[in-house]
Amino acid sequence: MNIVPISGGEHEFSLYGFKQLLDRKAVSVVQYDTNRVGGITAAHKINALCEAYSVPVIPHAGQMHNYHLTMSTLASPMAEYFPIFDVEVGNELFWYIFDGEPVADNGFLQLRDDVPGLGLTLKTEYLDQFHIIE
Image 1 (cartoon, rainbow, N blue to C red):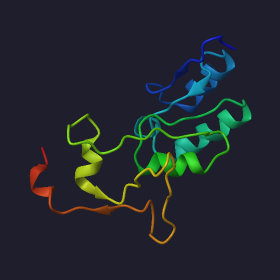
Image 2 (image 1 turned 60 degrees about the vertical axis):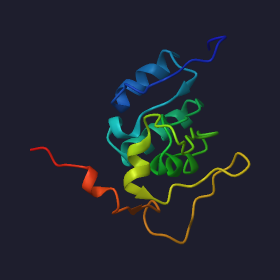
Image 3 (image 1 turned 120 degrees about the vertical axis):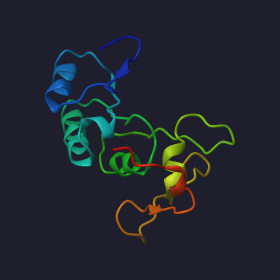
Image 4 (image 1 turned 90 degrees about the vertical axis):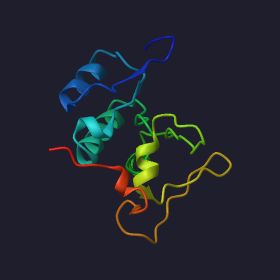
């Protein structure tokens, strides 16, 4: 393994590609992008692969779907978390359209178990700012 831990995988898209990274010991920490690997099911398969290789997984970016993936595997020691700022930092899309993102308290996130699905609801007050382009 590397002396300096190397994380990567944000631009890898397939289970086979992650297996190659793990076989070659190219990464110390896998950071896939759930939106690019094919969604929650594909990400869960990558978690299982990393768990078999004893390589930790910290999904790239926060958002609710990644928190659920992090909490569903022993391979994920932590999750990335981006608090809501008054200044836009690039993660605002989720904040504008969804309500229900957890707020960190003393370094921890608590996911609700009394809401369906991922625990998000659609906000309606910002929908007029988004347009469908055909």
